[in-house]
Length: 373
Ligand SMILES: NC(=O)c1ccc[n+]([C@@H]2O[C@H](COP(=O)([O-])OP(=O)(O)OC[C@H]3O[C@@H](n4cnc5c(N)ncnc54)[C@H](O)[C@@H]3O)[C@@H](O)[C@H]2O)c1
Ligand SMILES: C[C@@H](O)[C@H](N)C(=O)O
Image (tube, rainbow, N blue to C red; front, side, top):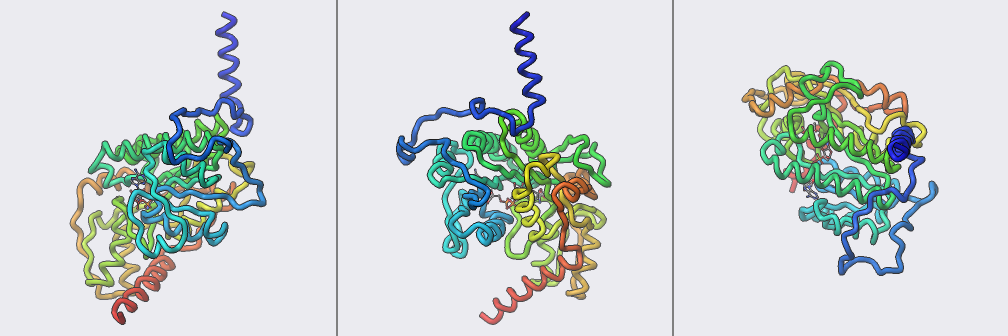
């Protein structure tokens, strides 16, 4: 009886304790032995710390996708080139390899991850590795491994080494039973894709580690992100990037979503700015650990109208992909990001017309360069 009472007191204390009050001694440490390439025994695994005046030492996983290279550029400007390490399982192109530290890292290899964090004295981790919505449905076992098992590795490493951890979530973490117009931070989340399920899992696990072990977990739910100099990696919102490339190349675009499919979207600079801002926000400002962020919502039809202001001869046709359409129909149409705006001052800079003009400024100058060469 006494044991049961003690146990229930301990559990309720844990549930009430804020993340910051947790003890390091209860951090889950996986003992997996020492790899031959690992650091020598006189180095303390728990010596990594940085004061507010130091720059963080950053690792980005899955850094060669649509968002990672841009994030590394932004963080290197702020914290110094050598303080930001990009990693991925793919071979980096020259312009990435020669522009700052790059390292091979498979997030499914726990030992290797730990070695990288220890040897490089990492203090902040941005976890970008994932299989996105459409490609995840095409390979569920791989998506489950990368998005769920990989995340478990990241969480344990981050808790063990007291890292500040950023994990992006997505509009895809909501489903057909969530309010779609608009979708608040806290509401029912029953996504129907492995991508969405894995992202809800990431949100909940990150928050659990925060309250249970004091992990400094920070998470933003990104809308569909639009960028000019990096290609999307197999998502449902990819059409909104492809239209620019096809408009410039051929003046024709075949859209795989219905013309009136409205989804939240954002220009990459806003997305990366929000990511850095939430990581730099004082912990006391964060009333939650997972926030929606938003900039605009539009449909393919509305985007095409805006693109035609720059390329009036553009011809758009629709050849709907049933799988992608079903995903899009289950996602938010509008995203309520009022908590992020209130708590840490989130504010987007790009609306639809600025986004389209910026895309053509970048892609237009690129294509002119290509023609000259
Ligand atoms: N791009 C968007 O519109 C968008 C929107 C919402 C959320 N997000 C999230 O932001 C993050 C980055 O998105 P992105 O668009 O750059 O994704 P992406 O698909 O373009 O890139 C993901 C990267 O993960 C890497 N990867 C795959 N398996 C790996 C493994 N085992 N180990 C290490 N790396 C591995 C891939 O090689 C790839 O470079 C993802 O978590 C994604 O869910 C993106
Ligand atoms: C929305 C986002 O998570 C991604 N661009 C996808 O479509 O899968």
